[in-house]
Image (cartoon, rainbow, N blue to C red; front, side, top):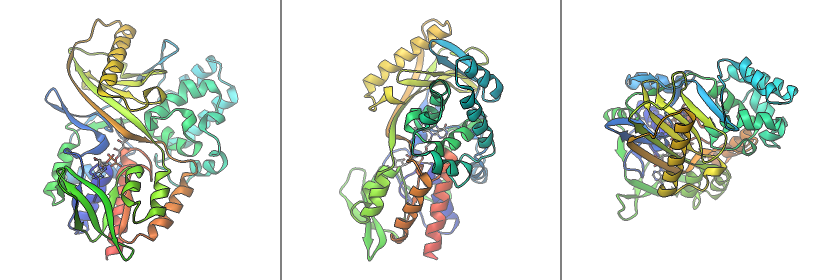
Length: 425
Ligand SMILES: Cc1cc2nc3c(=O)[nH]c(=O)nc-3n(C[C@H](O)[C@H](O)[C@H](O)COP(=O)(O)OP(=O)(O)OC[C@H]3O[C@@H](n4cnc5c(N)ncnc54)[C@H](O)[C@@H]3O)c2cc1C
């Protein structure tokens, strides 16, 4: 197993459950991948993916079975800063959102279209799977999302959504994956009170061998079958290690690099998937930042497009996300600090606070932070399955398969483990 993010945890758990010996390999010293585990002022946090929706059933079952691990409510009403005005748009009150759009001059047929798609998405599981939105992809994925909606809707409503889910502007994503965004955004969220670390520790107690600080450079193949990995432990020399099968639970761009020598056609396909950078910081302050009833703020321009209270219980802690065009390329630590300072001043001005005093800060950046997908996603996965069928005992998991959410990643890991188990039996 390569990659100890949520996809890898799903795969490792299922493989172990099927009775296999599992090495869970990760180049980072601390497992958890883009969940971005860290410690802030003595408490566990996740700088990256942390929100667990009510629809995240597979992940929730896993957490219950392995734990249980305490969850705390995490999502509150978001206020939007649009053209300098604070606007409260609540997904639980779609009528007010539609009224706001019409009042802002959005074309009525497009408001109706948006409203219809939102209703269709309500019952969807938030995954990139065959269904209504994959059919829409066939009709509409030749053009970006912005070509399907009035610019007022695109800027005021779609942008905060696509930025939140993909770190992408609405002209960088397509209709086919928009159902996943809509379905996810209207969910209700919780988060792991103690972060992802206890989950990984429990998996290790169940017999998954964790090999952190170990970088894999290639997949080894003999007679068309995967035979192991070339890896380097703790910065040491590259060595070959034998494995009966390999699951790569990585961003597509990394899986492409590891397979390029042995499976060039697969690697070429994987390299097409677009990734966008993301940086984030979690800061604890000497007091609460948002007024009662406001859980966070979505900003309509600049590198920071989202700043939210870390949780209902932790309102003096704010998670800032830096993504979208103005946040590219991935910032250096110095640039990130400048952006952070600017956003703190903006928050202080918007909510009439004095200078905020920091108690602690944890920062992270990912070059391949968000998967922005390809148009015609199901065609891509069909081609991928075809190529993968020629790569014996290799399986893939990650955000580029079923979706970007923790649930989608977890499910992709389970599916990858099941494919390997079938092949080995
Ligand atoms: C800022 C941010 C906030 C997000 N918020 C949410 C959220 O609230 N809710 C939600 O559902 N989703 C969220 N997401 C999306 C979600 O977090 C990710 O899609 C998911 O965590 C990806 O998991 P993964 O296991 O597929 O990949 P990763 O977490 O990236 O795991 C891959 C692992 O592979 C390791 N690795 C890479 N290369 C090598 C190598 N050569 N050798 C060995 N190891 C290697 C990496 O160190 C990493 O640990 C967010 C994403 C970001 C960036």
